Amino acid sequence: MNSITILDKEFVPYLVEKEIQEKITALADQLNKDYANKRPIFLSILNGSFLFTADLFKQITIEAEVCFIKLASYKGMSSSGNVITAIGLEANVSGRDIIILEDIIDTGKTLHHYLPQLLSSNPASIKVAVLLNKKEALQFPVKVDYTCFEIPNKFVVGYGLDYDGLGRNSKDIYQLK
Ligand code: IMP
Ligand code: MG
Image 1 (tube, protein in one colour):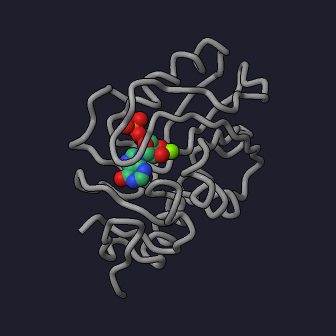
Image 2: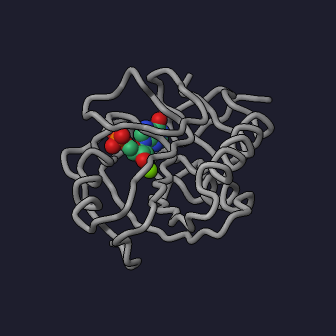
Image 3: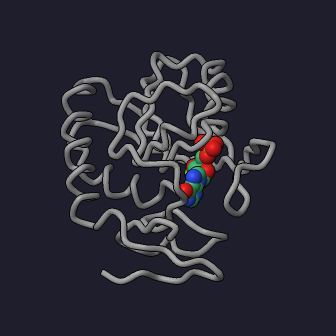
């Protein structure tokens, strides 16, 4: 695999499609076991999680629902101050088991701000499943229940993740050179 250039930055190959898909299959297997007979709602956080959500959800074999919200706290390559709800929650989550799907936990700010809001709608349970976890970057405590990859504190793009809106349409994940 070759490195790629997006706008002014060069990125090198980091996680390839096959290993991403293997981790997602393993996560789906685990969730199919943990949520058997529970009819969970998968709550996907747009935009970054759309490919992760689609590939995971196709492998969920138990009864399950999926819905989407859009939270934004990220501008360019560092987190901005606020967490904005650009598209809110339509589903009634009261009494339901919720699995949040997030592409990446970086500072933790997005979920740290959103989780209390979700809790106020009285779900039966909330678990967090992430594709990528940048543990060393965490500044706002978030309990992550399922992680596909723990990664170092370096900017990544691809497989839904963007640099300034670009790079989401890559099957592999690249790391800033
Ligand atoms: P947090 O609120 O700092 O945890 O950031 C979460 C959001 O920032 C993620 O859902 C991503 O949309 C974005 N983000 C964080 N790190 C990266 C990265 O390395 N590449 C692309 N987007 C990122
Ligand atoms: Mg995101």
